[in-house]
Amino acid sequence: MSIAIPSAGFAVTQGETVIGGLHGRHRHYFCGWCMSWMYTRGEGMDDFVNLRPSMLDKHQWFVPFAEFWTSEKLAWVTTAAVHSFETLPPLDHFPELIEQYAARGVRKPG
Image (cartoon, rainbow, N blue to C red; front, side, top):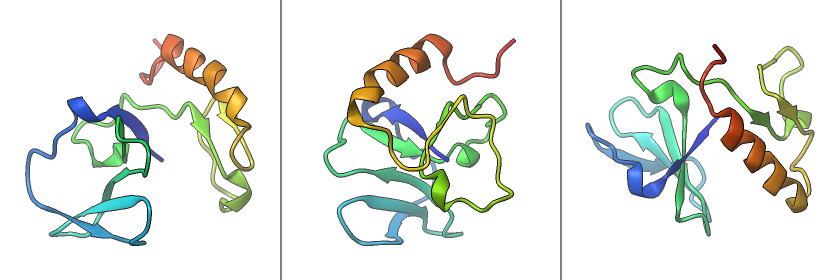
């Protein structure tokens, strides 16, 4: 689960990160002390950081909007995501998803 944060508004404010996991095109950053996966910087997506919301001190406001690659999830896993895709949707679906996401936001309704 991740939330796309604009790179310009993102900073690690405490501790040191290390690259962990796969050492390929996408860089996965982990806490250097506890080795928790914190965020990812995807190749070709320099404007955004994919942050794990569970790493935030206050994460209760976050509600998933879309889930991808559900064909690989454990059978008992469920989320409150509005949209669900077995793999990635076609690229031409993303403008509509982004528009809906922008209108709805990431906060819990109410």
